[in-house]
Each structure stands twice: as C-alpha cells, then as structure tokens.
Amino acid sequence: MIPLEKALKLVERNIPRLGIERIAIGESVGRILAENIVADGDQPPFDRSMMDGFAAAAADIEQAPATLKIVGEAAAGRGWHHKLKRGEAVRIMTGAPVPAGADSVQRVELTRSYFKANEEFVEILEPAKKGMSVVKKGSEIRRGKRLLASGDIVTPQNIAALAAFGYARVRVAKRPRVAIFGTGTEIVEIAKRPGADQIRNSNSITLAALSAKFGAATEIYPNAKDDLASLKKAIKAAVRGREILITTGGVSVGKYDLTKAALCELGAEIFFEKVALKPGKPVIAARLGKTLVFSLPGNPVSAAVTFYLFVRAAIVGMQGVRKTSMRSGTAVLADAVKAAKDRHTLTAARLANDVSGRLIAIPLRGKGSSDLVSFANAEALIDLEMNTRAEAGGLVRIFYL
Image 1: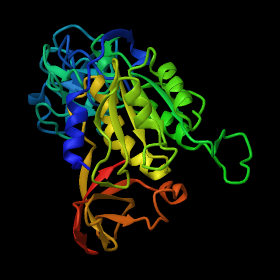
Image 2 (image 1 turned 180 degrees about the horizontal axis):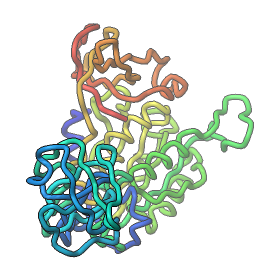
Image 3 (image 1 turned 180 degrees about the vertical axis):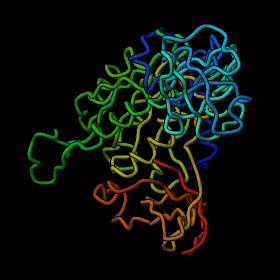
C-alpha cells in the first residue's frame, strides 16, 4: 500500500491538459474557462439611478421641503441628455442614467408633483444628500479589470458577467471523454431482474453521473466477463479515443480479480494498485497509451469514494482547474468515529446545523463498503488520519461531496 497523499500526487503529476474549443455562452455552464473574462467597459457605464424618483442637485434638496421645476424624464434605455440647472429636477426611473448636473435621487414616495401655470413642479418632502440612490459609473468594475480567470467554472451565478461584457462565445477546455464498464459475472443490467447470486449494475450509472457532474462526456460499455481474454478485449475497445477509462471490480486478490494482469499484458504503466485508504484500498491507477485508467473497487461506496479522490481530480485537472483537490471544510462531529489502524479513513456523513448555527457532521453507520443505501444520504466525508479517533463535539475536517 502507498499513502493516500502519495497516490493523489501520482495522479496529479500524470494529468494531461486537453485542448481548447470555443462554444456559445448558452452552452458554457459547467465548463472550465480557458481564457480570462475581462470587462470591456465600466460597469455601470454611467451614473445609474437605484430608485424611481427625481434626480436633482443635492444642494437644492439638502433642506426639505424643497420645490423644483420638472424639466424632463429619464428612463432605462432612454436618458435625458441635457445639463440640469439649479432649481430643476428630472423625473427618473430605476436603471436610468442620472443626468449631468444631478448628483442625488429622492424616491418618488417622498415627493409630490403638481402643475402650476402649465409647468410641472415637484415638492421634495424629505432631504437627500449627495450620492443618495446613485450608483456611480465604474463602481462595480472598471474597464480592463478581470472578472473571472482561466480555470474557473462557468456557473449560473457568474454567467451574467460573461453576457454583460459581450462574451457571446467563450473559450473553454475540451471535455474529457470517459468510458466506463463493470466486471464480474454476478453483475446484470439495471432493467433485468437479478438471478441467484447476482446484483444489478449500480456502479456504472453512478460513475457516469459523477463524471458528467465534473464536466466529462461519458459512455457506458457492456460489462466485461471474468476471464483475461475478455477483459483485455474490453479494455482495448474502451480506451480507443478516450482520455479516461473507469472500470469497477476485479482489483482485489481473488481468483477472478484479473484487471491488473490484463492491464499489464496490454502494456499499461501502473502508478499504484493499493492505497492505505478505507474504503478503497484496492484501487489501480495506470496509463495505457494516452488514456488514464482507473480501476476502482466493485463495492459501491468504495467505488464512489475512490472516484471522488482520483478520477474527479483527473477530470477537472484535464480541463485546467487550478486546484484539483476536493473542497474541504470543518464541522462539529455528532458521534465519535475512529480510523483504521493502518489506513487513512473517510467516513460518510450527512450535514446539519444545530440551534447555534454550527455545521454538524453526522456519521452514517453503514454496513460496510457495499452499503449503497446508507451512502445515498452522504453529503460529506469525514477525514481521519490512520489510527486516530475523533470524539463527539470535536472539530473534524470534511470533504464536501
């Protein structure tokens, strides 16, 4: 067994960068930027009103009530482009440019407008100071400033920034192409009813969903049989044109655990085959030609944990993400947990907040690494160094799933 930290570094060192493509902004959510996103103008591009109301010189309305002559109207997309004189006001709508000569806006609820001798006036009922309800030009960002960096992920929260500065098409990293198949004669397809000694193939669909979550294009291949010739044939077919191959099962030391032998006979370079990790000790990382191969344990929890640690890092690293490690944090432990004596231990947990607002990690007491029912509720992994114990009420490091 090699230490977990060493295994992670071996994977990181062997992650190739993929090419770049240009796509429409509407297709970019979830993709990794391959260019910096820079403001092509000030934002806002003019002094902008935050309210519906009246724009005026603050000097005219610092004392209230004050009566001003209404000389025009400014709406969003249709400004009043003249210079306001002292004693004058412009009716203004939210988002409209504040005219020259005005430096404050009083909201309409605190005013009263009326006509007198065919002219319109407004009475400002409460005072307003300079800058009130006005967003100054360039106060959000100045032209030439970077909003997002190459390696950032486009999200529903930040895509507006791309649109606001004219990025109708965006340079992004190409998506890794991932092939997935399971091994084992006990595995049947999802739609089939398992016979005696059989189980449905839950791993492949899970790994495809996880791969897609982190930006990969995935394809599930048929299960491979438990013989060396069939396994070699399946691997050769699956790596063709793929950046990553994920297999599950066949990585332990049993009579039918043939994955390592198949990879070696095909000429693969093995990075590691056992990691001091619980769950997920028997996991293979290798390179066959230009394809990274990850052969994960067959037990569903072990397969998921090793995916998050190793395969996820490869998928995002290929797309240029600067930090490939899992997002981590700290939480208060609800119940005591302990690590294996000789292995780094990751315990599945769900998260909650207590009455004080503290983040609580609640260990999921599953029935081992095959307990996919318990793991279905997992939101994080509690991180424990080998041969350690963490008590209830103490702080623990967690990895978010």
